[in-house]
Amino acid sequence: MVTEKYIGAIDQGTTGTRFMIFDHESNLVSSHYKEHQQIFPKPGWVEHDPLEIWKNTDFAIHKALQSAKLSIDDLKAIGITNQRETTVVWNKNSGIPICNAIVWQCTRTNDICESLKREGLEDEIKARTGLVTATYFSGPKIQWILDNVSKSRSKVTNQQLLFGNIDTWILWNLTGGIKGGVHVTDFSNASRTMLMNLKTLKWDDELLEILKVPRSMLPDIRPSSDSNIYGYVWKAEGKGPPICGDLGDQQAALFGQTCFESGNAKNTYGTGNFLLMNTGKNIVQSKSGLITTVGYGVGNEITYALEGSIAISGAAVQWLRDQLGFFSTAKESEELASSVEDNGGVYFVPAFVGLFSPHWDITARGTVVGLTRGSNKAHITRAVLESIAFQSVDVFDAMEVDSKVKLSNLRVDGGASKNSLLMQFQADILGIECIRPRIEETTALGAAYAAGLAVGYWQDLRELKETWAVDRIFKPSMSEDERKKHLHYWNKAVTKAKAWVDPS
Image (cartoon, rainbow, N blue to C red):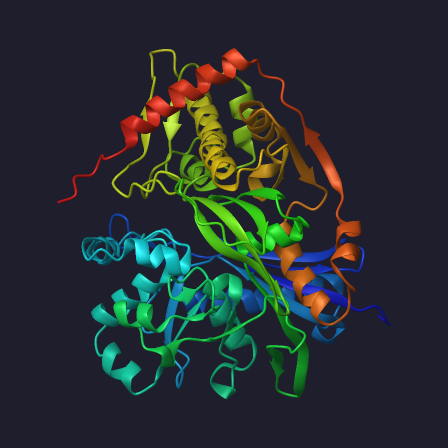
């Protein structure tokens, strides 16, 4: 008979959903992962099916529990972490989305964003939200849905429609859906909508008016770790465990890496790359193309962060696998890239949906330069892996300028952090140590930490820091001359990628 309680974490990402179960020592007890379909209706458009995501989430929970021979009641609490900015609008009476989710990578809202810029609103939006005016964020996506999906404006006027990023969509379904589901989000996810004021931590009435988003469809904003509990898992026979942790995936990784002190930084290598630095209670407005965001809120204690967002990193490896057929599993990319001693002069800029931080050029496109007759797929694969590290250097440099903090190391996590060739190159091209933790899936761990803190499973942040452990430290070994040469050619390649698509 099981007597020990565990913490569950839903990690709903861009390519799939994972449910992970942790014990008190942060050991992984069980996990199950299921991918969902990527939908590309037009060039630059990216969608997901919210119903498929919810179905996969429910499936992953049951499979992980089954594998561990546990029941849902063996969980002390559940936390959620999610792909941020991906936007769902659904009918609260039927539980059916009025269209597919618009994914954070999607560029269909470019006209809306450009209109805001022409109206001179960019600086005001940044001052209120910490965000650049870009297709990345949820607010313009909501406006696009309401303007383009038939009869949606009349339905929202009648208060039939709800909005949520993926965390809110899952939470609503997990707590009962049309049978009384809870409609909430947390500070970290709300800060990615372009609708929340960073100072007041509330929905901003003027921004709602500018983007034509009715307040009635927005969720309540709650702490990321909330002892007041958002809601409980709905069961036919009564309440399941409480859901009391909610963090956008990159803030969850910051939390899971125990970056609790100002100046701590982490980089997550997933579909995209996301480098975050804890700035404590200070709202640091970026002048170098970064984003100012909420890091996390434990109760009423708010921690802010600087973030550099890179749209395509691990997704470029998937592209080599799925579109070009270079290998059958992403893991094989390391072996193929290691079969050549260097990139052979090939540089790759993965601007498939434009360039995000710090460039913010939506007209950039993917570029391969430096090809010769001697170039082969190993060189291209190596160039793709190196592009992940190069993009992180651009963000890293901007972060040091904005924060006025010289970073001595970088904590790394996410799927691609398992690639030791990439991690060594990252340390070399940054010129600092990169520290990989024992548990690489720190997004899920961060969600688990947030939920566990809320119910007293872990007592405080100090106890969490004691559970964090190092797997490997990658030390830089590249000469300064070689480093400068690489960065010179990388910057030259980025110049070639920019402004490829004509604005018209």
